[in-house]
Image (tube, rainbow, N blue to C red; front, side, top):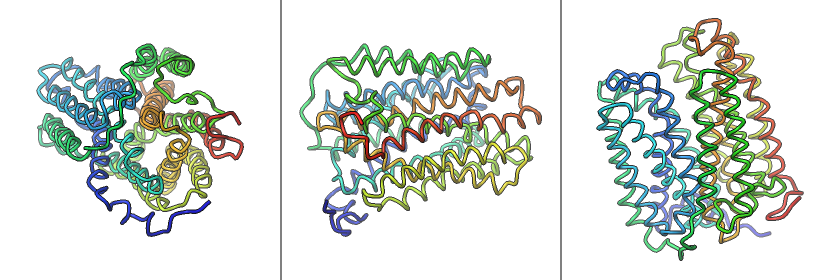
Length: 470
């Protein structure tokens, strides 16, 4: 197999021939999805003071994820029906509407409706951005483009809560959503201009309504589990939700109009094992960002700012690792994917040991390994999946990677929440409950990480074949 010369795989060539502006548009689309999912962490106390509804804090995130999961799964089909250019522009306009609704909300109900609309639109935006990568960039550049996308997610993990905190301290939480409305409008206008000539013929007018309906029930069950205070009920809802998601795979494989690629539910194939690795690895990673800051503040007396810096090591490591391996050739895919899976398991072991009363240096090591796990592996997993997709399935298959990630995040958040509530966090974060949570929030998801690692090894195994069983 011959490989293109280094001069044709570097950043200079990637951004040449008019690709720079489209690359920037894709990064903006991913940024909107990533940062909007995280910004509410620091503004919700202000929202609660103004609008009431403290009991619905978790729904500010859960409602967003419900919309984002459903839209992310359907983004590929949307781009086929309307064309990539019009679908992207439309998604940007819907995002503007959702942001305005939340910014101008007179009560918590209207605010949450705005969050659902934002989630749907950002899921479409991010999904269309992934489709744009598949259609607009040569295969030799895919690893670098996906590394940049991973970097955007890493940066958003730090800047999302920071941006929210700046507006909250200024007493202007509504300004966050006006800011995002402006960015979404910019994305919509830029898409109309920069994506001219990128559309392919529409793939038909049918929509997989049955799969979307069943998917909405599954995602809704997982999202509801995140806000249920009873541990048993929360775990039961997660189990029901994941079972329903598996049912979606079975229904979709037999449907005339599919939501996902044909092999999405077959773990013996590249696509199936790749999706499984993405889902379970993401699910295993959620506890650090959600429960790390309050645990550090309670047990180590850190200020919110310093706790944020400690958690930020995950994002820094993610970005550095992603950019560091971006130039790796295809023959190194298996190595980096497997190393990422190993780093994930190791990070959870270290965090479950050190988070409570271990040396802070080991907490930083655990957080860095957690970020590096995805920085090393994500772009190569995505590239392998894309290479296994047929031309007819590339749009829906590529956009589905975002839906897989966000659905895994929903499941992981719910499972981590159930583990935390089981040791008493639901009754208040005391020194005793924080000490227990510092262990079990991470130990409880090690089995998920092991399942993700197994799927990652299958993805990169020599026996796994494109489009047919191993």
